[in-house]
Length: 387
Image 1 (cartoon, rainbow, N blue to C red):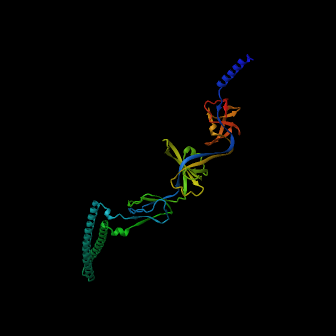
Image 2: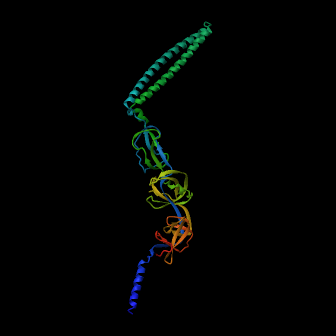
């Protein structure tokens, strides 16, 4: 018995040494291969916008009266939204006023000159008319030659034409004088002409007042923007390589705008891309994808609001799938570690569709098998593991 005690102690020490230096199994997290639906979506930022935004502009150049409407106000078709009056003469500077006064004085002098020319032309016409009548009487009594009669008739017609020209010249000079006087008129003409009303061409809601304060505007200056808030669409800016897989009519979910998720449908994928700078300063080619909401848009969703669109590009129903967290690359293949008898077994896979959660298994695994999630770098084929 005494001889067996040292042997037993030796065996115990040896077993303790083996247990201490034996590699411990890796503690891992596992999951099972299941069957289910796999939907692949593309997520992109976008914005909500009204399809038809009408910009109401100034019809004439003049003094815009202060716009009393504000963003959010409803307007009807034909409603007056702004008024534009002529520019008052007191807005002329000193130099322009001096030039206008000189022009008015010159116009008044031109009128007096035209009147004098008209009096002169009418006197010449009276004389030529009397002379022509006398020549006709003498010619009728054979007391005057035909040539002298022709000269008297020519002089009468020439005087008539000169008198008509003088009258037209006087009318033109009087109009010029009225125009020059109007530049110096301080209010009568302005108050009589005010104001030209700018009307809304369509019914809707005011989105933005571009020009609100009273000021002098030129013809075509934007004043307000009007749109129908019930006619919203979503514009998603998608990377060009992702836009290739989007088909018209595909389903989408609109989120990230501050309310409940909205269901939408892809209406059109624009045929051209534009260059945009990402948050990291990288140039990207982005394509606009237009989405139509299936239901009426909520009243809280407005023009220009930021949104996030999740567009469905691929669907697989009731297929074997493995969590993305279990996948890793070995060489050029995808692979996972399966759990068999507390050992990690390397399995190479052929994958189909993938999203952010699962990948479709085409070949390499079957439903019900257990795989290791987030395999550590020190894990190898055949390693001991503790699920």
